[in-house]
Length: 326
Image (cartoon, rainbow, N blue to C red; front, side, top):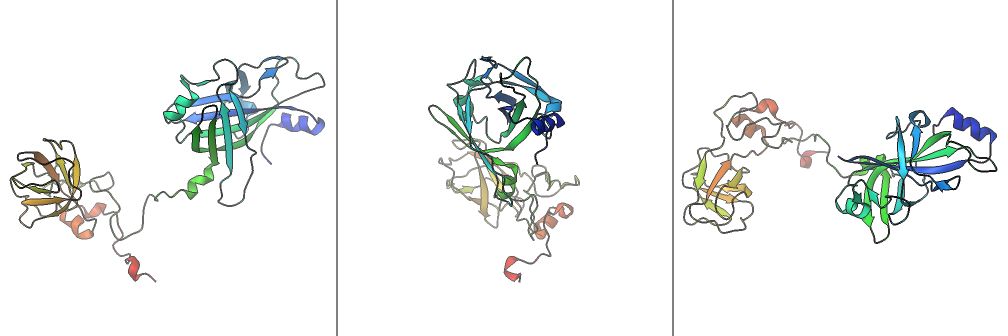
């Protein structure tokens, strides 16, 4: 049973009729919460803003302290179903910004269509609550006395489509996060899982210092100039590289038509006078174009030892490769 207030439970146990309204809460990343209700008239008057105290919400993720809900645009939605297993429940909401009262065509300082186009709803959380009011044969009388609310659905926006007259929002339960094809934080594998030079690795690629601050390892070997014969996928260096560990390193152009662009080092000559990049630069490399070269790492224990950074090795070298697994 969904949790709610004792007042609502007591009322429903002795009454067969009740007034219900839907409350929509949209938590937009970086923009805050926007709340709307679809209660159009109360006692024949426009409903306006509805303030509901926090003790009327039980188990609400987004409204534990209560909130004020503005008169919203027209809303329609599908029924809410509960499923067992990993298949996420789904709620589809259609918003009709052209209907409703006041500034119902806007969410914040943007129209709904502008907000959708601007990515406001990307990763947004949505809570649908159902609020209850007492009723008698003459309808609702006097000040609003909220009996309580029930959290009808809570999830995250998975799809959104903006049409001429309606905004279609698909919300899926949070269990949908378990079905996404995102990589786990750590992989148990022989190779190191860190990105060379990131916080997990801790190696300073510019100054050639390991995570302990000990320097003297391969780092930025200064700035080089392209010699005659350099191509968009091959650079001839004005001076040889001092270390043989620049494969899978980074070349960054600092001048010329390709200034600001980076490429991964695919291969280098034994004498360090030539580099081959993984993808050609889009523009011709002219003689004298300058670039920097950062070292690379093959994510093996051998390379990590060369950099004096084995204490931060992020792999599990004794795990057998997949072809040897049973």
